[in-house]
Image (cartoon, rainbow, N blue to C red; front, top):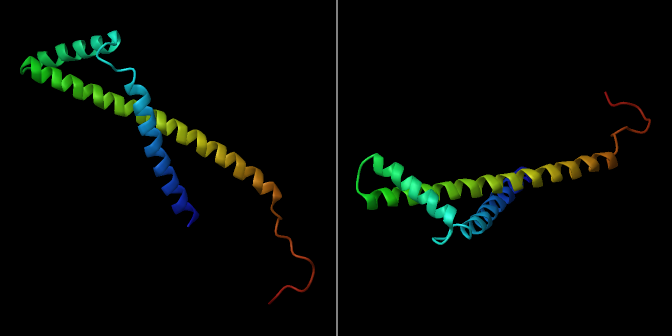
Length: 111
């Protein structure tokens, strides 16, 4: 049961972190941002070399930019989840010191 709760919590946090990271990254991709314009222009040129119209090439370049943005947001979200799991593991590991070792007190052993 604990594993199911852990998986559900991790999936929920992963979705939330990815969305927040996507919003944070998206704020840097404006049509007025020179590096973003350069990237889209370069990608459009690469797509245009593969054939099709310039409008199709630009559409493919923007789709590639969207895919790259989603990928980077997911990587950052997984990084955060990994860190949280590591911290949770270390906290749980320290709790092991508080548990008894399970030694029984005297008495005959059952047959």
